[in-house]
Figure (cartoon, rainbow, N blue to C red):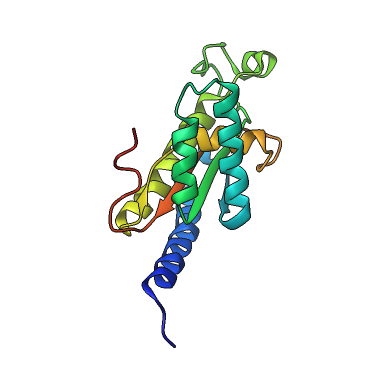
Length: 177
């Protein structure tokens, strides 16, 4: 069977996306508690995400990077979304959230510092897989925010990032105005 470069690149990107989800899952977690969720989008689901990013851009009267990043999502083959459920870990006298302890964090509706740190490590691990496999990528809070607004994750996920993936002659993320 003959595969064109476009077909081969699409398959490579999706294979990398699956590996990125696995890397996010196996990334180190504080206290060994796994609150990470991953989702991979392509096709119409990816288009829905970029449309939401444009909607946010419009609501901000064009301020911020949402419109620019939506264009990158459109030009990408797939997007890996990584989010974290907010579930304070119960570390006694931690206070890293700034609220004294987990009870204070829960009462204030704050994000657990362990969960946020775990998200950063998971996102970094996922992006490293793409980098190691020579798939162009960018970590975008804008895609994560749009995913949250679209309720792509479970309701307990409170923070997320998106990592669009592309394979082209020149990185679509390079000259981004």
